[in-house]
Amino acid sequence: MKNQSIIKVISILVVFFFSTTIYAGGPWPQLKNKGYIKISEWWIISNEHYTDIGRIDPNVTSGLFNTSIYAEYGLTDRITGVVYFPFLSVAYFNNTISGTTGETILPGEKVNSLGDTDIGLNYKILNGPLALSASITFGIPLGNDGGGSTGALQTGDGEFNQLFQLNAGTGFKLGTANAYASVYAGYNNRTKGFSDEIRFGVEAGVTLFDNRLTAIARLYGIQSTNNGVEGQRENSTSIFANNSEHLTFGPELAYNVNETWGVSAGFGTALSGKLIYAATSYNVGVFFKI
Image (cartoon, rainbow, N blue to C red):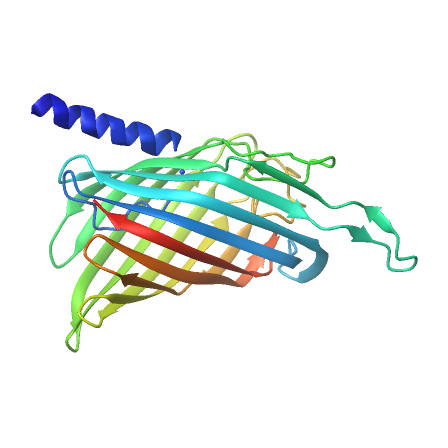
């Protein structure tokens, strides 16, 4: 029986690794042998981007679609394994048309590949009125960092990074409804000449209608430390640019169809940014509880 449990855990982890920006479970890791799996579609289409001084400029219409698996599994009551794996990532841009002659200057292109994958561990430090956890996430560069004839189509940044993060939160009653609030802060160590990053966010949610519907609001961002190689992909208008920064508001609704599975939908819109698309991203998903 013990050997079967070990084999089960190893099998799940192998599937997670080969089948994942990670949000390592928040301050509430999974209990041992419990888990959560979400299959989702995330996309962004933009004809504008934030410049390196935070202004908005036009660009040829471009987009990125990620079909992914996100999973958490309790290895022990304190340690949760977390994986985010975009198993299909599609980047494209439309034809570039001359404003004077109407001729096609550069034909549109598209690339399909895996996306950059994250795998990590979340360790529970405190559990009670205040929940506290620490996580480490490894960014695996499985995506294409230079697709298309111009090398501008990206489904990844091509660098291996390590994100160290602290997560804190608390649950409480909002009238008769269950609610929670959490915060996180982390340092992302990047390689290959990319600048490191400070990551931060706050989140709050409330569960309604007999714990079936959860409304979530998130405010999160990235701040570059500007300690990388000067000029390293700083002119990119993709979401993988070096020294990219943003502050984003992202609400989401999650509906529990039953005790085992549910559906979710949300969006994220940048309130400010540098070297990143100036457009709203969307996501829909189906989640399962182990």
